[in-house]
Length: 351
Ligand code: 1HN
Image 1 (spheres, rainbow, N blue to C red):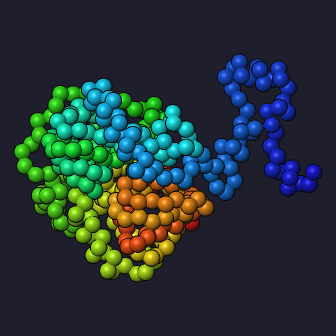
Image 2 (cartoon, rainbow, N blue to C red; image 1 turned 45 degrees about the vertical axis):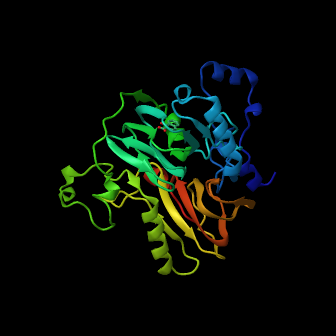
């Protein structure tokens, strides 16, 4: 054996005497070195998460069937969870840190009030007449709207219209659950304040905030709960005109008072993919979920080709090499990533 091979081959568990292993295990201790390379692979993490697409045309009929089979009272939240096949259907994760599901609410139904330690967002996929009330602020849900339900804030859903309403839920649940910190409290239905939500009054225009919010003690942790899609779409179309070929036409959803990501754990952004352009962002340490708002196209994720169209949702593993391409016109994508928590932990990287 040459010296470099020797440096690479750490001792295995089987190399140790059986009685020594038994004694250690009886004491609830274990040697690190047989597992060290598994815990800290060289250069790049080992990833079980697979590049994957859930097509809305496949999931929607199953969700509508849930609407027939399971009354809301038997579900509280009528959700089909998008499970990354690299992790199976029991873990309920799209990526190691991101939970996503498609939720169906039917006319007249109520998803009762609760609050919990995981943070969530809703991104509306179809239908109208749905609403979410968050700490007393009633937020209408139109296609493409983003609505935050941050950790600890009361939230309940309802439907005052006709036809099904479907939205994508994205939560930091896998991380909160892994921390053994996930729990909920149920409460009575909220009394919503009359009037419009803050996206239509206090935070209608970027660069302008209510004057009194400049005094720091008057600043809410989550001043804007709803981000209406028509505003985001129009802003992307304006940004496209000022963006160099090949550069990202992408807007981050931020807290308008701080300019920081709107939730502490997960980041959200909307992207316009130009027709006929291959968009290849730098490889990054964050995992993400991409939802197709409008248009169709194709993505290469770590060598896997995935075709997508409106309503589809993709899983992007950490450290993945990614290219997105819109076909037959421009496309609009909604991204959820775990970059905020990776930044907070001090290891977010772009390569
Ligand atoms: C939750 O609170 C909702 O409020 C949806 O609509 C999905 C998945 C796991 C944990 C909490 C909701 C959820 C959830």
